[in-house]
Length: 428
Ligand code: URA
Image (tube, rainbow, N blue to C red; front, side, top):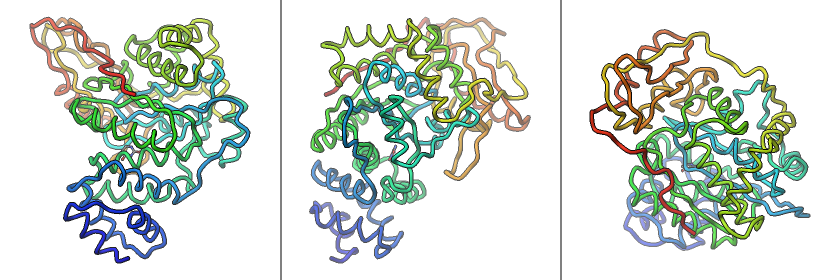
């Protein structure tokens, strides 16, 4: 087969066969297909799309570019949750201990934040000593013994995705449903899970800004998962404003501790309970979603989920008592009275990134201690001079740019607005 012919076929909107897709990915990994050819293939896919079968073949080709974890002697049901990414989205840290303490196993291969979105690995690494780099055997042992383990995408897991994602990032080909779907699902299928619960975000802080695109992505992910023999559920949730109040790594870990101790923001708690309940239901821990939500909530109330989180941190080498704190903080006050009409998640994410809480390029180093603590969200009333948010920072110049962005993120008006819906749909 000739790479340029495969690119031409996709460019012209034709369907690719399984063997053509397999060949292209395999030869890319062998160095026989060059980065410029892969870039052309990605752009052709971006414009021409892929059908269900092609997306599945691409997912499998990427999955088998590396190792696939196999829990040989299964001791329970293995289930993960994947979020398509957002701002203040820290539910994994709350959900994994809840689900693990109920007896299911949670192998989580997590990602880093990129652009305005946060990443589970960055949040966890803000805990001094927390190790996310275990070899696959140790990962399996920890999942089986502790119940949950968080690791990064090791070099054995989907190396094709790693290379392709880096190219997509610099060739404007990230926002393509078949490419996002194959990228996410290849990594999730490599985890050795039985089921997957997806949190597909929609709104300004998400990859998919419209409900229509979010549903299309959710359906594509569900389809590939089911065709691969996995049980799948997708929750479409609101990412028009940040989730919870904390945005920035160590601030977000603190907020997770609040939720696990029975307090914390309602939206974060409710979405965590919804997702944990979907995992418990899919893993047959309860008969219906109501009972699953009750069970998840009980694990917070009785303190066992918190104990499990502390156990996970201990086994992964973290010291929660030494969470870093930024040197300075500054209150951002409202210039008028009224109601918060809008709080743009993407702008808050960029304001936090500007402080050093995120990265623009994968190789950038982040500052784990800085970020933004929101005090007002959509629907809240505010009087002139009241604090809207507190900015935690270590650098005065960065603070200035961050405050400018935060100012654009808040829209305040006289119209009373209701609190936005959190969960729009559950798709199976
Ligand atoms: N997350 C991924 O892992 N891959 C994508 O393409 C987008 C989000």
